Image 1 (cartoon, rainbow, N blue to C red):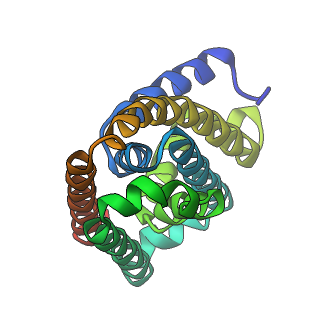
Image 2: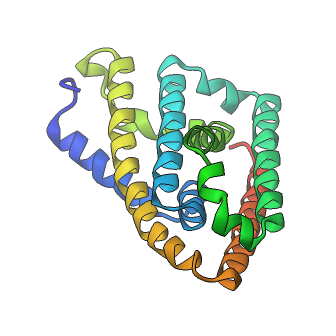
Length: 211
């Protein structure tokens, strides 16, 4: 981190905050999970997503992400796995009933499952690695030394910004979730909305083209 000047880190952090606030698959995922399962669920999903970002950062730093940029087959396989998982989540949301949500969801949706869901959601999106591959090097400077520690440091700053933004989304959506628990009709509607969002994200990911 000492290899990067404060002004570079500040500009990168501000940019990362803006990117985190921009509507996209990850923050929509945090929003729906928080509304359905509570604030803690949103935070656990956020930690999972950030663990995925750590993997993407490492992949970019080691040059692995370039494989997904160069190989159409690897890109397609990974995105289809991610799309299939999102469709599975959509199916679960559509078939959930209010009584299950009101009585059992919080205990069933335990921490490890939610965390793992966030990791899988992030890692199976090859666009994240390609985005990092294009984004992080813009703030690194070969004149300041080895690029790997600089890229890892920038990835860490991006993750901090993501935790702050997504954590805020989890808190806000969790408050909505508390209200949902008092209304079976609201629970049913929220699950349908969540199912449509998951299905839409799956279609969007499946149609994503390699750039």
